[in-house]
Image 1: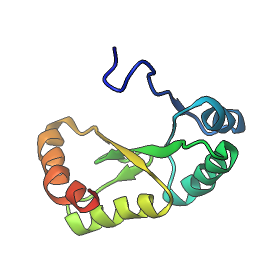
Image 2: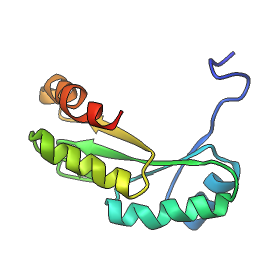
Image 3: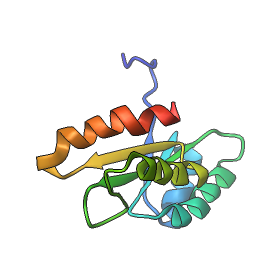
Image 4: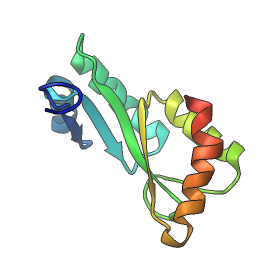
Length: 121
């Protein structure tokens, strides 16, 4: 049995109108990718509006340390916290950070664990 009970939460991704409707009507969470906070906000608001009284968590995936896709970059904790805050302010309720630069994987994860994530707990 899954730790949360008999029902496994359903995460639905995508940016099409059909994906947003699916997330709002049968999903427990919606996840976007490759967007800026400004692009994310209206889609997240649409999912929430279509969900009505249902609570559907909205979030996105960003890449850290890469030069493609929705990304976070830099080593300055203040800048990284500001970037994460921009997602929060756009309505993002969960943020999946992909650490893709293998030679820097551990230092980047440690930086986030020590300097960025605690600001949002």
